[in-house]
Image (cartoon, rainbow, N blue to C red):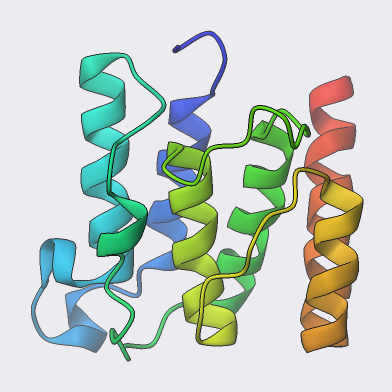
Length: 149
């Protein structure tokens, strides 16, 4: 699985989202959206898997801490490049879906369904929040162009 996903990029992007203990006062680990993602990324990496059964249902939806919005948007753009872009093989408990969904909770208040296509996803996010949708699309293009080179 390590050849399918770039775990290092995902971990780096996740680290950028956290504002640290200076802002939060103490780390809540997996009770925090970033900590929850970190725990699942490490699990997926160690076990060489992409699916973590039941993880989507355990996302801490009521984490109201502040995160770096620009970094969260950029993390979603990265996850869209990591996704296979197919509705047929999409799995809710895929580590990429868990990561992206946690970022959506930070930005939009709830996870958003991924319908298997980046363009359909961007279009539906823009209906909820046009500005954030446009920023996610710009981030996606930036990551896509850098991975093509």
